[in-house]
Image 1 (cartoon, rainbow, N blue to C red):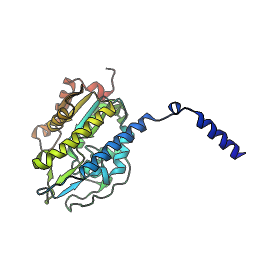
Image 2 (image 1 turned 90 degrees about the vertical axis):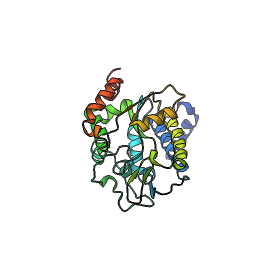
Image 3 (image 1 turned 180 degrees about the vertical axis):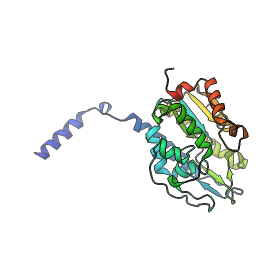
Length: 273
């Protein structure tokens, strides 16, 4: 009897046209985004960096589980606004694979789970602790804290918005000092930017983004370069870095004013637009 039922189910399935079979469009877009990122990582792995760069981390590789959890939980087609960061910070995305990944917000608000491994060459002064990292990521704390305050829930924020980093790599000197992409030697920087520009254009098209907000001027400049031939609107807000005196004087208030002026707070609060 069981064999007969199995055969009937097989025969029914075999005559259902492929177009009518149920698929999960959200799963499809997440798979595609992760594929784009894998391709970018493969291309970036062929690049060489010399002194003062001594170590390069790629959290999309060693923090793959937590990064994928973030993407699968929160990325979907039709998110109109993309907040674009530059590259991972040593105590944020470098630790857990989530853009601006302040551990407290990643664990408690975003509810990200998963195992984090170690980079192939770990700097003794920049150890990876994953979701057990106890050091705060100030920029991430400010950014995610702002969205938590105004969106109240991740579901509200991610209804219209997503956060993505332009470059997935972390660069540091032999002393452990952070090196940002603009600080790389020109001969190293240019190939990196070309690959990341292309990937950004692919991600924006995939998600259906209409507005890109650079978190800082560098991200805005790269978005303009990568998306110059598209209809995507591009803006920027002040970077919440603790290295910025202006950000330390009241970043949240500045960000609120900037986002209100360009008409994006309704997207963040998921109000009728």
